[in-house]
Amino acid sequence: MKKVVEIRSLNFTYPDGNTALEDISLDIFKAETLGIIGPNGAGKSTLLLHLNGLLNGNGNIKIFDKPPIKENLSFIRSKVGFVFQDPQDQLFMPTAYEDVAFGPQNLGLKKQEIDKRVNDALGEVGLSDKKDHLSYHLSLGEQRKLSIATVLSMSPEIIVLDEPNSNLDPASRRHLINLLKNLTITKVIATHDLEMVLDLCSRVVLLDKGRVIREGQPKGILSDKTLLEFHSLEVPLSLSLNK
Ligand code: ADP
Image (cartoon, rainbow, N blue to C red; front, side):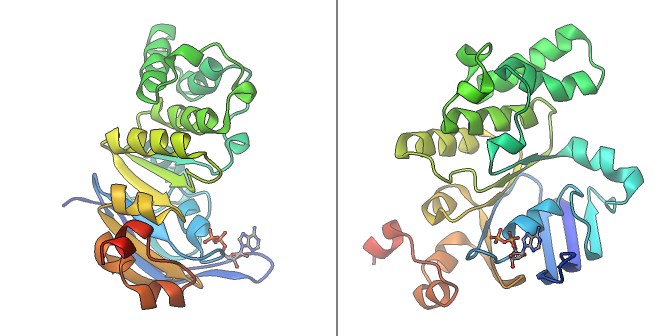
């Protein structure tokens, strides 16, 4: 399988002295769906922010063979789309159309190509009928989908999502999971939703205290009660019921 991200011995300390990542080594492969799990404060978000150069710790990272140095950042960000947990961090234009068009417009594309990209992206997330709606009037589930559309309109090769399910009602959660299932690009998802990891992810990484604790097939890791409880997580219900 083709490696799209290579991380070696990555360490990151916030300016206040808080060490968030310690000696992380990890590869990400084309077309996989990688789940990043771990308790609060494990370093999940900090790790994700390294995947498109929003943070830059000590160590070696290569994203599509390029280190995230200044001159590579626009290339890297064209390949790696980041979906923030809070749609307020992603959506800042009045309407859904304008939010999704913002990225393609900045690429200097022609109006016709922008329209196509916006319509395709809104179609992919099931929001075609909300095109002219005010972004801030949409429900949280719709705003999450719209945030994903803002990234898809840039045709990325990797989509990185930080807690895409948090605070969604069950129906919105299910919609979002189905949407992600249908996206064939490489996905990296930090989440507390271990049922979703089982359903979606081909591989999972367990982080705690800034370190990789375990990495492998979701079913094996997520059925290890002792391991999960030691790291403040729980075996998902569907696996505990199957025992
Ligand atoms: P997770 O996403 O797994 O909850 P984070 O990456 O948010 O973990 O946090 C990892 C560690 O870094 C925690 O100890 C957290 O308190 C700390 N941290 C996160 N953001 C900041 C920040 N902006 N400044 C200082 N410390 C931070």
